[in-house]
Amino acid sequence: MRDGVRIALDVVRPEDEGVDTKRDSILVMTRYWRGLKGQASNQWADLLVPHGYAVVVGDVRGTGASFGVWPHHRTRDETLDFTEVLDWIVAQRWSTGRVVGYGLSYTANTADWMAERNHPALKGIVPRFTDYDPYEDIWFPGGIRNAFVGERWGNRVKSLDRNVKVNEDGEREPSPGVRPVGQAGEADLAAALRDHEPVPSVWEGFQQVTFKDDRPSTWGGSSMLDWSAMEVADKVSRSGTAIQNWAGWFDSGTAHGAIRRFLRLSNPMNVIIGPWNHGGRVSWDPLRADGEAIPPARPAQQANDIRFADACFNGQAACEVGKVLHYYTLGEGAWKSTRSWPLPATRRRWYMASGSRLSSSADETGFDSLQVDSALGDVASNRWDTNGGSGGPVDYGDRRQFDAARLAYTSEPLTGDIEITGHPVVQLNVTSTREDGAFFAYLEALTPEGVSCYLTEGQLRALHRKVWNKSPFSVLGPQHTYLKRDAEPLIPGEAAILTFTLHPISARLPAGYRLRVCLAGSDKTTFANVPAEGQPPFLQFHRGPAGCYID
Image (cartoon, rainbow, N blue to C red):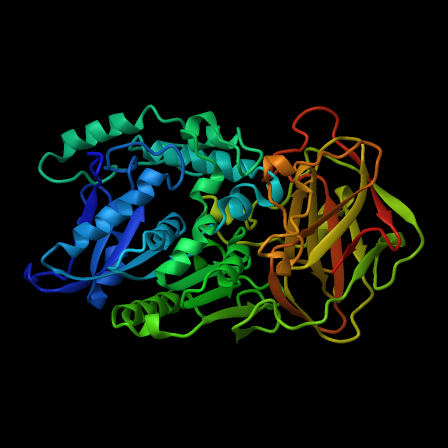
């Protein structure tokens, strides 16, 4: 690279092919090792080379067999490297000069930043299950630290940078390590690992973050704004790069980010949101029979990506006009497409009323009390865990198991079918004994048999409650800056309004089902408690016309 740092790349092309045979290239940049020692290929090449591409997979700087340092995701040095890697590909005798960026999770985020470079060789990107805004979509949703994922993921990738693989429990796994490069590979790898060693785990930085513009001492002056692809949307739009983006209703906040991408960018674009876990490996529709297949399965998704890549290489994708969002509706089991979001719809308000009722009309003034239990958790197989390194299936089970430590409000049986598509919005009128707190709202569907099925959730740290009226995403509901200048602590004993969007969902509930909303003040399974110390808050949720409701 321009600063002398060496980046490790693998090139895999069709076997027995001459060096002058021209091939379109797929570029994948990873921080999870580009390949294992002793193996000749990698997962990306095995998938894509049989379709006629040359596949280039690289360890981003400071990881794998690459030299340099990795203090946090997508440092500016890391993303500037992508220009030079693209230059290098174009200069190869086997290259047509056309490249598509591809990836899943971290590698999807690097594909997004390739588009930011506005390189003439880059004809398209396929970011699968990416964190478009890393603060809101995974690490601090609603401004609340995702402690379980942050600590586990941060420490696991730090182990990778020491050439050690560990499992979800932090136990060392047998592994030959990352693949060295070239004849001097072992010596070079040892030198690269010496570069990596002094850098603290990114988890140390996360523990110093409250606001988007905080700059942890271990991050070299950067904040999370500096490595958010959403913050460079204008540059990506100017590039005109064609995009195909995948997200899951049950994969952390990837659906939230995908919809923001759809609204913010002007690029030719397909956005596809399905009922998936992280990576689209496992589908889950809590409103349909267990085990029922939901297409497209992973092989069909990948075949779609290959068709899209071909359209990028032949110029067809760049000629497409506008954007299309494809989404799956739970319960109905149907795929739908739209060129605009939010959808034209009637918004209906449900009040949290006396007697644990969810009512279409406000009742008398009053309040419901909740003593926050800082030990309260939730299921481990949740939307956050799947994106935190497990990649496992999502299953929330019967939500009634948590009723004893939460407030639950249930509607009368629905008299007709109802579809909920978009971002539900919650308003909480609340009085607390503490200056700060974590507020969780869950939207559920209660079957006629009495099983409560998870649909979606939202959360907000009270410190971030100021509404950002000039947000470009206000059309989705109330937004928040999460910036230090906009902090608004609660005043103990005084009522305050907290209003926030839930993560988007599309679900069709049949007549006879009931809606349920549950409120909580902690989720120890995943999130850090707020406040971190002292007596947990005692909360009063106010009822009445100016009380708590969900739209």
